[in-house]
Each structure stands twice: as C-alpha cells, then as structure tokens.
Image (cartoon, rainbow, N blue to C red; front, side, top):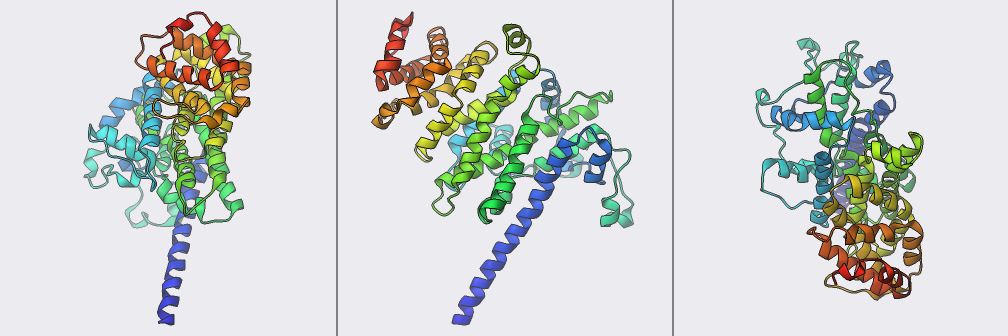
Length: 442
C-alpha cells in the first residue's frame, strides 16, 4: 500500500512536470517568438530567421471571415473603426460577465460567429474552429511547399525563407497568437516561483502593448499592392491581436476567484496594464505634437484606450468576486487618464456604450447600485477629491445630462445620484450647483 501511494505521488509529479514543460514550450512559440518578431518587424531578415519555413496555419482563417473582417482591419491602420472597437468592447464585457470560477464561458447559440468570439476570449480549446473540416474549405493566403521527403526535417523547417514578405510574416504571427490560450499557458502562471511568473507576465504585457498601440507592427498599411494577401492576413489578425490580453485577463480573474491558486500579483499586473492602455491615447497625442483642440479633432481615439476603459469597467463590475479595495485604487490611479478618454470618447465614440462603461466604476466608488448599498466607500475621502481634481465629475455631468434620451441614461443618472448620496458634502454640493441638475433621474 505505501508503494502504491508513492507511485501515485510520483505520477502526479510527472504529470505536473509534463504540463509545465508543455506550457513553457507553448509560451516560447506563441508569446516570446511573436514578441521578438513584433519588436523587429522592420528587420525582415531577422524575422525570417525566427519563422523559418512557417507561414501560418490553414485552419486559422476562412474565406467567409476574410470577406467579413478583412477590410475593417485594413482600415484600422489609418482610422479606428467604430464597428471593430464595438466588437472588442462587447467581447470584453461578455467575457468578464460569463467567466465562472473555472474559467468557462456560457455558450451563445445566436450564430456561429458569436460562439467563436466567446470561445476565443476565455478558452478557445473549448470551441471547434473547424480543424475537422476538409482543407478545401479553408483559404491559405500564402502558399508554400517543402520537398515531400524532407517535410519533417527540423533543419529544413528552420531554414529562413528568403522570399518571406512582411505581410506573410504578419499572417504567420497572427496564426501563432490565435493558438495562445489561458488553459494552455496556465501552469506557467501558477505553478512556478514568483520570479518566473513575473518574467512571463512581463513578456505578456510587452506583447499586449505592442499589438494594441497605434501603428501596431501587425496592422501596418500594405505597400506590396497585393490586396488579397493583405486582406487575408488582416482577417487572421483581428482576434489574434487580443489573444495575449485574454490570457492575462483570465489569469487575473482566476487568481482572484480561486481558493486553490492565489496570485495577487497577477491581478495587480493586469490592472497596471489596463491603466497603461487607457493612457495610450494621451501619450499618442503628445507624440504627435501636443494635446490641443486641433490635434484631438484630427486624430482618432486610440483603440487601446477604449479597450482599457471597457476592461476596467468589466473588472469593476465583478467586485463581488474580486478585491474591491484594489479595484477602487486602480480607478483612482487612472482617473486623470480616464477623464481624458471620456472627453475624447464623448465626441468620437458611441455615447450609449460610453455610459454603460462608466456605470460600474461609479457604482464601485459610491457603493450604491440598483439593488445594493455598501456604506464602507462613504468614508474614503480620496474618491470625491480625485473625481473633482481630475475633472472627471464635470465630464460625467456634461455627458449624463446632455444625453437623457439614451437607453443607458436612467442607470447612469442613478449612479451619479449614488455618488452624491455617498459623498454629500463634496460631490453632492457640486452636482446640486450644476445647471440642469433638475433633469437628473433619481
């Protein structure tokens, strides 16, 4: 019997070691290689060395997805597409709301696209992307071949392809990124020591910023004149650019909700990433020469800032299962950048969605929601002072009281009213003196 127990323990250790080894290999191929390539996308010779003969997976992209998404991603290089941003925002909100203790998503049967979107956020391995479908149903934008007898020779496979173009490299990187899932990389984020975990999350964070920043290395204009190939690569990259973000987000949620694996540093890293994403737009305007009125009118709001704002909103909406103090601190730390994004988004973004994004943050700071009241926030003097100093409260009143016809308006007004009740001597007085306060729905 003791021997049997020892064998069981040995098998468990072997299984754990195997899962860690697989995760390390996957992380190297699916995160570190794309990171190195994105950092050196201007050096095509180096990119060719990293990719060897690899040009992307057949099962990553279909003809139908090309037609539906190809042009919108190509447009994103020059201008943020509102439809594309709306899709990302909806994915964040739906993913956070549907995520359960074990990281699974509730299935949406409305159509095959929505099923794929939800599956891709949390655990793409749960969704059948069509690997079992015959290859004729898939479109391979960049054809390549190897000699039959050498098709598995690692030496031949690793040789750089001198004909590899930038567009082919982009498609290949997108193919790798779409395979990166939280379930595959989980052992690296919980089973290793703190230093190793920090190293992996640091690489994830770097890749997220590279992929979402303006002029992302994977979303550049095509100068080759091959529109068909560019559209194909673009279609593969639409969801791929968000894959590292979903991995870090799911790890952060699991670290806060799991009783088995507590890694508070993961949530802290995630919140720090969200703050930096929200700040991208203001930094981008400064890089262009300033944040004056002229620059703001001629420059589109950065997609990264919208993603960061929406993700922070979803995180604030999960305060029943995550740490409320850390969420409040994250909102307060990012308040100046949130104020900037709200001001810009009120002119360039869907205002109804903007109100919906702001409501969870306001409810978090007041402790008052439609069906619940928590009085512990009322003693936090940093909340009203930061709201006033950042100028965000003024922005909230301008947007809320000038868009009373929107479907989100009553809920937004209730959230504003909750802030006034929670902090009557500061926020309450300011709101009461503001013109048109009589239109505030209680």
